[in-house]
Length: 379
Ligand SMILES: [Zn+2]
Image 1: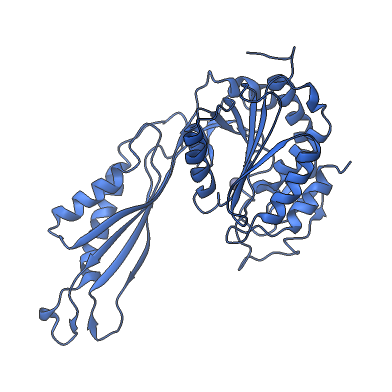
Image 2 (image 1 turned 30 degrees about the vertical axis):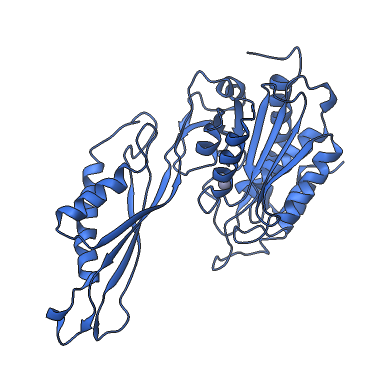
């Protein structure tokens, strides 16, 4: 039977950068799971789908193990080896996605291959998503579909993002928002005949900076976050067509990170109010995308399940968003916990320590035994 390193080697060799298809990787995983007796479902298109695999009594409250199949790009990064060929160096396995998060997927496959899944008395569900790295798009669509189906899913849910085995129970969300400033074009020798959309946007950006400063005083979750407020980033700006034309259009895009318990569109609405208060009226706005925040209770079953595996006494927070916010919409109590470090994810020469990968196999087996096998429940 292939060990986790062999699985990881195969998974790394399949380039699943977010703009590419997940078909090949999903087929590799599905064929192995199918041979273990899993029921396989695909939600989405052939190129872009979420893989949901389940085994054990349907609708019983066992365990969800989840992760994403896509990775960030390698272009422009100073890799010192082929990112799609697993390379071992000083006990570390190097390749794109080793930490984030094909390592967890590889360890999970090996773990399950070593268990007698016929003895499960609670359902084990695997959820592998697409397009997580570009805004948790796959899990967002999946949550809608599964909610519409009204399908019961286990509450305990582990998202195997690289946390160095630290349990993370909270993370901010992410909202992408757009403001389009409309002016009137004119010859640049007669600016009085036009209305400069870039200058309007510039005034708005100053107001957004002011709002961002004010938000830093609206703190909460001080116990979990180093920077316990909504972070705002004026991210892109596009406007103007020629040096001698007064620009009639300027598009500004913002990203901000709403905290649990707040309305995710609150900051967008406040930006709109600030812009209106500047007297700028010819502005269109829209929320482009909402990736929900996550907050899971300390008393959750997932917490009890993971505490024995974590070196840290306290559950912390992630600064990055995960699929957890979307999965929580399905009644799950997700926690983020997995091998490898977020500090090497998304970078050149991303790696996972071989020892961490191998250790994860036993951890996953223990989680499945605790949650899904009779006599072993700690409920
Ligand atoms: Zn990830």
